[in-house]
Image (cartoon, rainbow over all chains, first blue to last red; front, side, top):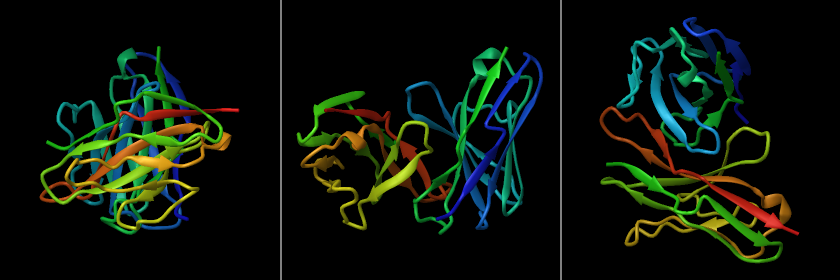
Length: 116
Length: 112
């Protein structure tokens, strides 16, 4: 099956610094990737849709200047949490739909961010 | 508005008992519904989708448009079914590009 890989799997940073998380599709091309945020024992909240070669589409309530998304190639999307604060600590998960518009998403393993 | 509701946070059953994980949705268009599962320390993965109408690992789910429900069922639960289950709605249309909206999730605990 299709594989989506995230890096790093966990990161600890100081408050005020920026952190970049990478999401790669290893064996397929993804014009669209999705970034989710998951709080402990809670659901996945869609943050934004990452579109290759164009601006990301953010969900209501998600600060686009806080969570910068870049989808520069068909196999890589990055999420940068800028000026991170403790409340940004969370589990960030990316996903992609290899078949395009099929609704069957393949998920990365997730990246746990802890902001001190 | 697009919404998926899973009313139960935790469902605990004994091995061999029937299981039904409830899911209700709200969507103005023609819905595509999915069930995703997350086993302990594993990534989220697709369990089944309504358009395929197939049974996976003994689980089935029927889309009921009248009741706007997509409940997940299994007649005899097994311990290895213990996991977090998410119901999801695929939203298409202008600007939606096939994004998935997830319910809150239900933890299924199957006791021996």
